[in-house]
Image (cartoon, rainbow, N blue to C red):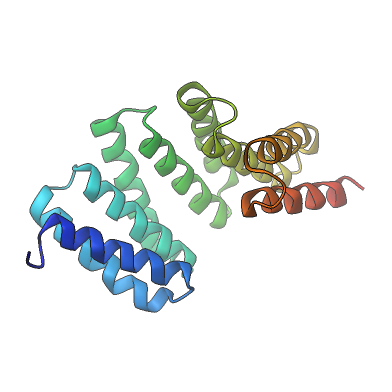
Length: 191
């Protein structure tokens, strides 16, 4: 099919994602960059596949601690997602969360909070209160509020996230276990 065929680019992105999940971030980066370059060249800057490639590379860079490199990509992805797909599209909501988490990693909690609130409100409206992405958004906002010392506001969100994960995904799911760990951290902060 050739290097720039959409199926080839999808395969490159999938391999990059697998390597990332295996913790092989250095091996994943050139593949994510190749997938992004290819989708930009063949599909344009605003195509949903390109936007996904931008976000994937940004998240990888964030995981590598390259926050300065990741931020412009996160902002580009979000800006294009808003214009192309709208504010409430699930991919846009993912990009909002990604930028907010990056800003939180940079210590820009005040900038991250309105984005996390926007992502949660959009997710509740678009996907519903029990959707796994909504539950993740609830946990993300709760964690930020905990980091800001807003325990009274964080507590009910942590509880909602944990209860929702248990109900929707079950006790053994990794996301439920993560929500349980967050609840333990909250309880320690409250003590």
